[in-house]
Amino acid sequence: MLGIAALPLGIELRFLDPAPNGCASAVGEQIVGAYDDPEVIGRFCEGLDVVTYEFENVSAAALEQIARHAFVWPPISILEVSQDRLSEKECMQSLGIGTAGFQRVDTEDDLDRALGEIGLPAVLKTRRMGYDGKGQAVVRTVDEATAAFAELGRGGLILESLVPFDRELSIIAVRSMTGEFRAYPLVQNTHRAGILRTSIAPAPDIDSGLQAEAESISKRIADKYGHVGVLTVELFDVGGKLLVNELAPRVHNSGHWSIEGAVTSQFENHVRAVAGLPLGSTRVEGEWTMANLIGGVPPAETLLGIAGAQLHLYGKSERPGRKLGHVTVRTDRPGGPATAQEICGLADAHAL
Ligand SMILES: Nc1ncnc2c1ncn2[C@@H]1O[C@H](COP(=O)(O)OP(=O)(O)O)[C@@H](O)[C@H]1O
Ligand SMILES: [Mg+2]
Image: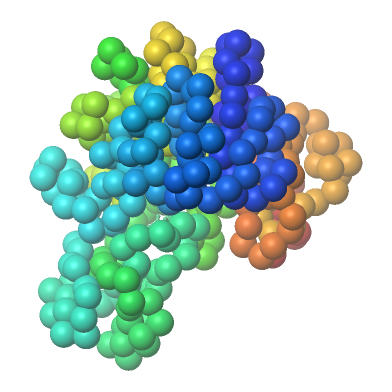
């Protein structure tokens, strides 16, 4: 989707993906190889002007190597912070931004102490490499916490309080090389088993104070790192107060609706930012619902038979819990909510 946004701007593309025939190879040259293989990295960055990433678990060391040959945006420093849930939360703390209560857990003694501090229920998470709810467990008893520690507890953990949120929101924003900052309207997200199922944009019932608070949180983080590109902040809304769940220094699944729904999509604005071009408008007209296709995909004929449904397939093979595509529909017109419900029902019926 980044590549598709970059092509009309006259930008030539090269992608690095360990999987042969990665979906981006349809829009540019692909180098197949590991993210952390210096020889592969050397071939990849030959002749490139700018390198960006759309996945947090790329190697920061490899990006350091690339940075000797090309500009790397967003900054490696914000990637490194977002790769570690502990440093991410410590960063929020240093900026005076609220998060769930958290404690570092390396040993069983740490776990006992953390449970004493945080209480139950809580969430035990690996600090690194988690995504789509992987590497984490909700624990409601000490026994569950001990079992989760036995399963997860090798590479460093964090215990978080389980936040009794009213809803989950995200704020997607973009910052340019000159420090210009623009945000999209807050998005409301629902997850199942830690995986994003649906997003509604703009989120319903947002007063201007909440939008301003979310933008201020995002801007403080972006300015601290001299961020360039899209920055997403996942938030919990607890009685109208925002807590940060996590950062993603990249385009985000909860912003996919912006392809149809915003004047400039998150993908185009990311490309514009990292290429040093002026940012585009983040204005949204109407209300949009995005439904993820997870594990399995309804027949395209069925989905496209629904008036207004916009289908995006990623060309990936079916696997339980894997995001294979999404559908976007405008929902602020007569029949809109019923259409969204029909699409979400189909997505659910085929989900694995
Ligand atoms: N501390 C928490 N309190 C309540 N829910 C949580 C907490 N941490 C995670 N979750 C739930 O699990 C989902 C995935 O967790 P997250 O930390 O965002 O990891 P991932 O990297 O997998 O997206 C969140 O969107 C939220 O629904
Ligand atoms: Mg998340």
